[in-house]
Image 1 (cartoon, one colour):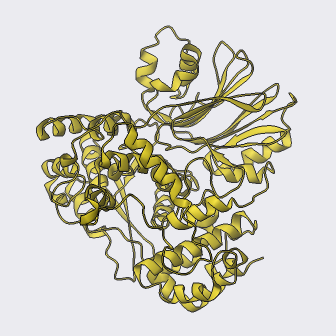
Image 2: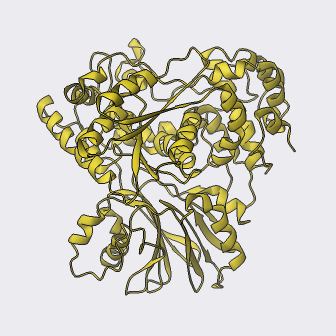
Image 3: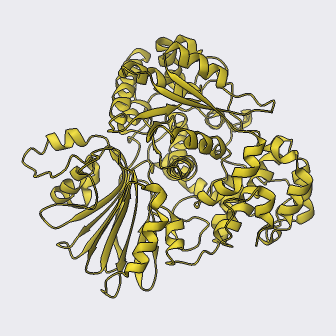
Length: 589
């Protein structure tokens, strides 16, 4: 796990050292264990390293005899198998990423087809017309962003690094901002920072002379509709896939643990980790003190005790909310107003004191049909069936000056495309989430919160072996009797009955509405005074919205406006809010 960045100049000149220095500095939190750079002609590759595998010889850039250089962010989990399949290859290190470099020399730009892992990779090949090759893993677990300017093509693991290096001035993309306000994240290639683009999940870009000349893309999900399979066959296949995925996700030369929410997904991971490890699993669980909101600490504590895990509980309360939210918003440069960033930040801060790697449960809902919205998709319209994400956060609240419907276009277009690919309604909804919600919300949250603390997050559900076992299951093995993740529940019920897998979801809700309402008058007035809020919303209605934040919809909308105001302060106005409370940050200039 690392940070990567680079430049390719359009006029053939060498990138300036001062710019490269600023890029490395901006990515230092992602790689506190060292840095490296490759400069050849018009191109520079940079890496800041968080050493996880091959602690002694794995520094980057990596080189192969043909002259290509590589820097990477992430882990290639099947590197042992890849190296064994290339016995005559002159590997120089024990690095997991070196195999990718030799695959590129063998297979060209299709090299990523053989990779199993989470990665953003940059390869510079002077022998192929000076090509710069950028690749991102199919699920988009690891981020990668780029800009195209009149003088250069530049890329980085975080858009904030491109801004801090002085390569682009931060400006708002109004359309992407409107999508963010309604969805809590933005879609596709564009984010609310104008001119900064995402390399899409599974995409490989080929850049020459500072211009993108080719694009290729690998799918995250297996192709085709549901397969005919019995429940017994599905359970056996799922057991093999989960155990194989957790096994390879534990490949590490440093200590690792996990985040345990007490839900279905993380409980399944805990069960397998306990089976695979002789030493107790180190597990961290977040909870919320001083509120009536139910959390899963007691359930997680019971499961950890049952499996002999070393369990630690991390609290997050209103004081933490007030003191940490400005710092968190400043870390989430690609904005996602997912309230789970709050416990994720607290868990990462604590886990990083002892570990460098944690396994997490992201992806279980998307692959196994866990969200309630999937059940709505399956119902016909006359029984209350709905399309996925049919309603935005601010619809019918009367707060925004202009409630544009264009935010729906990218989601609706994705749904139509997925349906044309032979997927059924449930699969199309799952695929839509895997294209946008997963990489642009959940995985951005995970990456920024953990990397801000020098901690690597791994996601065993987001693995091609698990996707193959799950995505093409019949609907009845995903959703039955009003419950999603049916087959995963069945597996967990067999292997960890104490998890009570078929109980109604206890839920994981962060009490942001209650925290906002406790100081609603001052917070509402301060948010309403922000120029970025007055531009898009009626100030008096913003104040009224905050006073009603104890209600579910109003609380969610108030949270989005508060997060947006703090994000705007940090990334558009470029005000340092790291040590400020919420109100101090809003008033800072």
